[in-house]
Figure 1 (cartoon, rainbow, N blue to C red):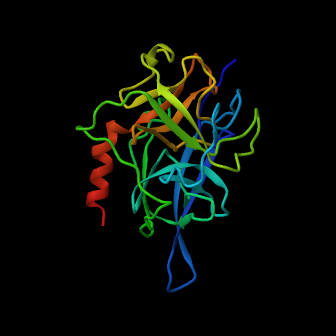
Figure 2: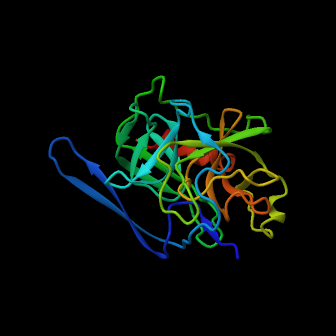
Length: 263
């Protein structure tokens, strides 16, 4: 039996408390912004991590963010789209951008969640404003957001993350991994009409390549543009059930409005 799931590190059906610490320099104290949300979660049935991929070359994915708990545990992925903004799926805590000794660690200033539907997984997108701008350099750079003038993407895309490393494991990959995938057309056939206009599917027609549990919120980048957010699916790397992503093009105006109008 296959299991439907979101691709966040969500192993039990439970109420999840998300606490975002806002730190102030004047006093060594913090305020917590508490967000309650319900998640329906179940273990992956197939193999974990970025399936069919490899460890990335250091500093090659400059926009990758890790959203973490207060104790530094990876929770899900994110994408730097502006020096002060990260896009992810519906989950957030501490932001760690890049890795290998050149990471920059941030707390969260503000969070904007779209009208997410927990039943259909529609609008699985969240904007996170950092407590300070990221320092852009040779190792940290935002990715481009597609807009109405961006040509349709084709060919190979890359998806990256720190997903779990083996079947039924709760252990995330200690290194950032990535895999090349392609958009899978007519995806609604695989998912019985559940693919909405704000979603897209990507993987391999033969299976064996996919994002997986722990990769949720991470980027799917095609031709240099941020086209998808790891969202949900059935199993991992199954040729009959490709990975489902939030289609970023459908939300580019929403993203840019908050970036341009939030003090």
